[in-house]
Structure formats: C-alpha cells, structure tokens
Amino acid sequence: MARPTKQGIDYFPVDVQFNDQLELLIADKGAEALAVIITIWQLIYQNNGYYIENGHDLTLLIKRRIIIEPVVTSEIIIAAIDRGIFDKELYKKHNILTSNGIQKRYISATRLKKNINLVENYLLVDVSNVGNYTYVGVNAVVNATKEEVDVDADKKKRNICIFSQDDFDKFWKIYPKEKHTGKKETIVRWKTLMKSKELPALEIILGAIKSQITWRERTDSEEFIPPWKNPATWLNKGCWEDEVPEKEESSWSRRVRESKEEEGN
Image 1 (tube, rainbow, N blue to C red):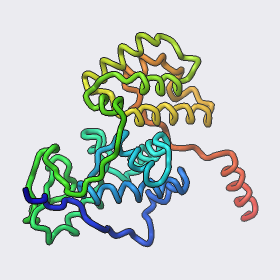
Image 2 (image 1 turned 180 degrees about the vertical axis):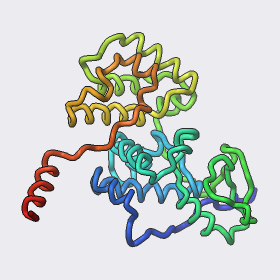
Image 3 (image 1 turned 90 degrees about the vertical axis):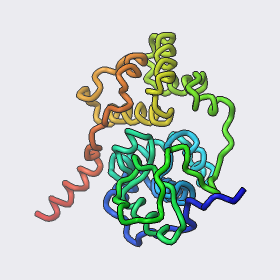
Image 4 (image 1 turned 30 degrees about the vertical axis):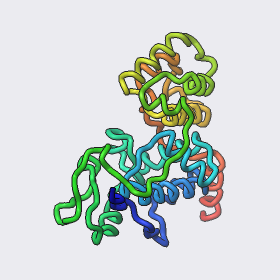
C-alpha cells in the first residue's frame, strides 16, 4: 500500500513582531503562554496542517514537549481563545483550535502539494481558487507523520463516554469546598452529560472553575456567580461556559499609574 500523502508541513513562518492579542496574552499569563502557543502551532502544522482537536491528549503532547502541566496549558488555551488567537466559534462548535491566519499560511505552504484533505466545516478561508484539495469527513484526514501519545486506559475510555472516577475526583477536589454537597447527585449528572456528549474536556471544566475562583478572590465581588452553586447545579447549567469579566486593574498597577500621573502634573 502506498504511503499516504503528507498532510502536514515541515516548517512555518513566525512574525518578528507578535500582534497585540498575543502580547497581551503573554503579559497576562507569562512566558509559558508563548511556549504553549508556539507548541500548538507546531502540532497543528505538523499534523492536520490547519487545525488541531483540543483535549487531554493535546495537553499531554504539550507537556511532553515543554513540561507544562495540563491544567496550566488549558488555562492558557482558554485565554487565547478569549483573545481571538484561536477562533471561538469553531472551538465552541467542534472543539478545535485554528484561526484565519493559520489556515491562510497552511493553504499557501501547500499550494504545490498534489492533494490536501480539508474538512469544509472547519474552514475560515475561501478555497475556491485552490485546486489541490479534497473535502473529506473529520475521520478521513490522514497524515503520514501524525504524532501520537500513549494514554492510559481511563483516558481511552473517556473517548467513548465511560465514567472516569479519576476525572471526577479532580473536579471535586478543585470545586470550592464550602459547596461540597450532593456528591452522588453530582456523579449522576456527570455521567449523564458524558453519555449525551455534552460534557467538554476535563481541562475546560477545571480551567473554568479556577478562573471563576480567581475572579472572586481578586475582586471580592458578589456580582459574578453569586453565590457559588452546588456542583450538580453548576454542571447542569453548563457553567463552564460562563465568561469571566476582563481582568480589573490591580491595586499595584493603579498605584503606579497614579504616581506617574502625579509626576506629570
């Protein structure tokens, strides 16, 4: 059998000056954010070429390359989506990471390939003037150099919506302890959401909870999620989709700004 045409590409350009969205992400999340974003770009271009599925396997691949914990990676990914570095609509609909710029660069880099496979619903760019592509279903995208990662039995089971006690325990541990009520009810709701495929990746859930906790601690505000719902209700209402308001100016930044304003007067 002939080796399939390589879907990915061997290199990609990186601008000498990052755009405002990426610079703000780095300012917010630190140098780890830059490492995560560049690694995601590498995995995108190396494998499918213009997108990558988000999830636990992705965070494990990133951890293997740059030794960053999956929960931290997930927080950075969510922040990157919020800042428009990855397309939010395709992320919500298909749980993939991609962007207009990524797709434009990929189409340009593969213009001399004999054929590339594209999933029509994943596209953000017009390919009507591109002659070397074939529309395929999601499962038909084949890459001769696709990188794989070893995952344990529980991780594999999660892909077919089988309950993982380990995942639930991580959720229960990070959820505010003062709301640790109705554990059995919460497990039932967790299993129901998994079977209906309405439950997102674990990292999205954990990242959302951590962001919401951080917001309340930082602002001491009762205007956002007042008060914390019990875990079953939080899951039932899909509160992982609740958007945390933009970060407010810290007291330290405010003092610096006010000091400079006084010096200018």
